[in-house]
Length: 186
Image (tube, rainbow, N blue to C red; front, side, top):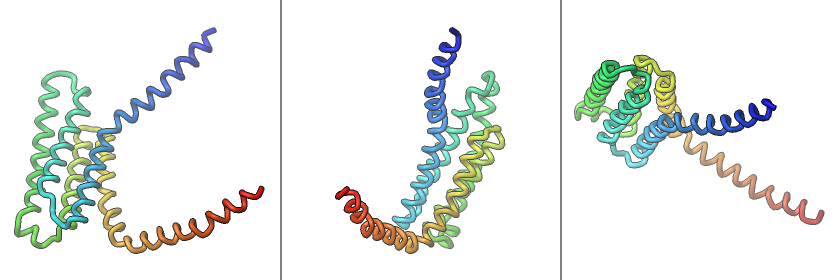
């Protein structure tokens, strides 16, 4: 009799555990998507988004504090968490602003500037994850860092990717009607 109860409990825990996993991971996915969107927008508009990267650093710093808030046992630990993360992200913001100084920015085109700022954001995120210690924040920093060469590769390979897509669409157009005609008379 206890076996059906265990099965019922397992079925209830299964979907809620999956939902909980996605709810926990959603903030990290959103931050990563915003970072990729910032680089994509900069590549399209060829204008550096100075304020956007500062906003992303603040959002990432808030994410670090919010996700680690529960692990801080008391008020003093939470205050220390806020202080260390604030100092950490202020240092990242100062470094970003050094890159954005007019003398330095002149040497870099806008798309390169956005990749440099994303690299600094990725480094700051990874180091925050090491400092906290938080494996999801470390992985977010690594994912941001991996986006940098991926975007550079996509930009250099854009013509190849467009030609490959046209080729695949052409194959689909050529062979799709034959498959439908082969199935039709049967």
